[in-house]
Length: 549
Image (cartoon, rainbow, N blue to C red; front, top):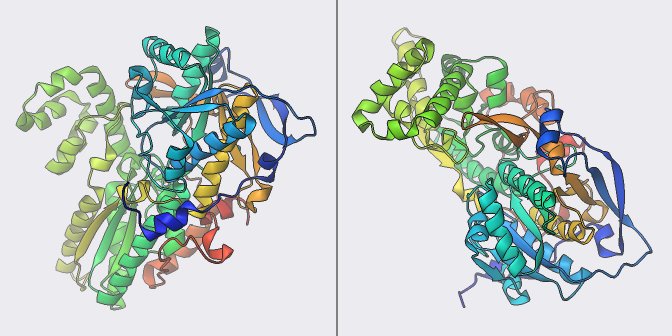
């Protein structure tokens, strides 16, 4: 048996808090029929069996129901997020409480395990080893997309062999879109298999009225904020570096915004604001450089800058370029791969529209190459491979040199660059995520026992004590719209971006001018599991502001 740290041993004993409703006899309250957030007719035509389902809320009841045992399958899909093991623990405990003869099977390395019939039965001994731990290593994860009939049918073979009547897919917006497609197909052929989703992504962009937060966001932001706080303490001690810190968040700036609220850096760029105001790359460089000058005039030749991972996609002219690149490479992938590396730049320049060709040609060679690297499974640029932090540090340095030559800048400018990504994906879950994830799993078990399919597990009111949390389900089709993927319009769950009229951004915007010039760093320190409730159990500042708490 692998050696365990003292923290692992102590943490294993933690009993997650759950909504009071899940501890008693659970009844079900259905709301009105729902519709998708956009493209209603298109979504309805694609999901005739699972569209328009009602919202579900679990409520107390005195009517005890005898549920038959059920074999349930579970898949971890996409990137890791703290708390996934607790979702699985919650599913296991939930189905066992409903009927002790129920069994749980985990498919190995994500959706590919379902297709390849690679699985393991998750017994109590296995589950107990992973309670309250980070990572997805109990069964592993993968990024195989479930979108073809052949895949669905191949998966159904093993589901029938194991007598599995329900499948839980734990993943982000794309993974839950796949869950919805699978639920629709199995319903259309009367396969007798329910499909339930659980909301996972540290990026925080899978949320809406019924999904307050995607799990893992709380922990990841606290981990990143701890490390940023450490850097700021070092920064304020040495007083000689500007730290350019890129943070996870390809499609939205939720992580950067939450970390800014936690640590109060000198600068935090918000991608959604950049796009809304039509800022150019030059505008961003001047904005940063002007703050560097202002701080230097006060004798402060140091500072911290938070940069969302997907920033470059939100600069309007860069987004136009990347959209055209995505579409072109989706249609000409094989041809492009045959081009020699040294000839790729000229090849791309010759294939783009005049405006985008000129922009592409103006980019540093390293960045231009990074824009043409292999696409992610959804046909998009892998923005995590674009070293935006280095690009900004270099370009700000050049701008300051230009200003110094004409007497506009007299300070010293030295940089350090960082990218915090994997450090936060598998951290041991905070109390909030440990509780939230366990409750999501337990709720999924009740959705299964209620015979539901095409739903995502929903736990709300999470700024209140856990006993007051509201558990239920939201139809996945309710969150969907049509978007372009691989050059084609596809049904997908709509991503939640930072709202510029929302309370979290407004709070940040009200403070940032002062943080830019003054040094008002906050040092959150490490995640605390054991101690006062006001330290250990608090949800993110983002969620508290959104809920008016």
